[in-house]
Length: 374
Image (spheres, rainbow, N blue to C red):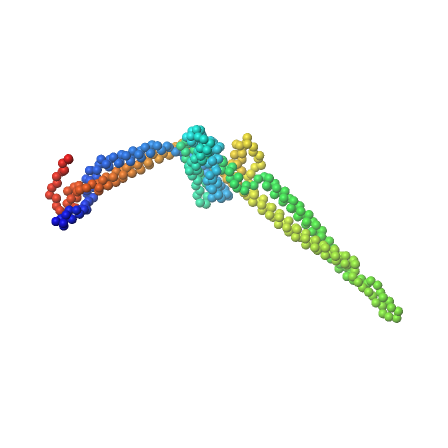
């Protein structure tokens, strides 16, 4: 009795086959269809909520400048904010402009930050290794705004990079030129003085060879004894020797000064060449606040070898992600419906078909009767 009760309480593990799936899933068709329609409906709503985006493109030729450093400057967080401040929210993101018009000053600053963040996220910068071309892409829901924002960002980049890079100005070049002229003048005067001192030293050496070191001072005559001649240092020779020593010291000092001046000239020349190599196209223009447009044109021309190869134009065709999202929604809805049907099929109690019962109980099924609804 206990053995029979234990056998009846034991859970029977049902055995399914692939051939059972069509029949069993068909029984769950209502749940599968409901889940499929719900997921597909959500996907369709999300797809039609997406708006068409327009991709504007531009390219830069960086020349001898480092493409990596230029990409870093292009990706600086200051540039999108400068673009927003210059163009304003109504021309860049009208929806945010409507919110900012009703917001407090603190909220307006936050909205400006969101707009700058949107520009940063929508900007794409690419550079093929080993090439001096940097390509930029920007997408926006308005084709005119996409081109305007990208072109303004390029202009602000050319202006901004002059502030962050050690670009020389005309005053620096003029200062270095004047400094080089002064040093070269001092060097010339030192060389003239050195030549004069050297010539004087050569003349002194010639005189010293002709002037004896000692001269007779006087003769001692002793009656009935020998005559003694007293000698001593020649005063003229001493004067010449003293002058020679002084000239030798002055020549050494002049040679040292001449070498130092020559080194300074070389250093100034190297600095001027470095400055010219960094920014050889800088023009001497004074730009006032009223000449902002002229200042932008100057920045476009006076930035090393940086050139805008292609300015952004309003794209004629947009890119829509509705169809890919609809296809993905259809796939996900199908998988979700099948998954719900399989789960419901596995969770239903009992043996759903005669084949499953025969396979599970390992007994032949002679017949099956449908259950009457209660």
